[in-house]
Amino acid sequence: MPESTPAKEKILRITLVKSPIGYSKRHKATVRALGLHRMNQTVEQADRPTLWGMIAFVRHLVEVEAVEDTKA
Image 1 (cartoon, one colour):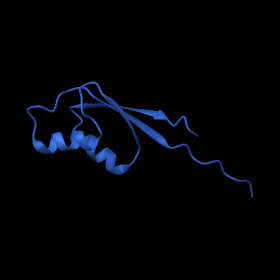
Image 2 (cartoon, rainbow, N blue to C red):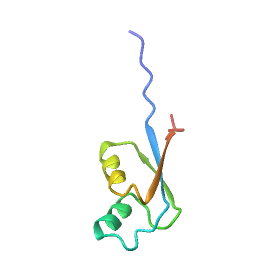
Image 3 (cartoon, one colour):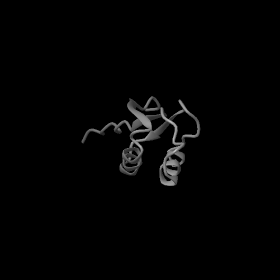
């Protein structure tokens, strides 16, 4: 049987585009949990269902784009 190539892991690029100042502590904590600390900071995270839940909670503060993993 032919060996299957490993599936490329999807990566999400998340950018903080609006300040969480003036929002609840839960919003601020979620932004921190995503790894964002400053305005216009971008982090790359592996695509997981838990990550999408956090993004949905603070969708008004962040921008998300999908990129392909360059390590594979």
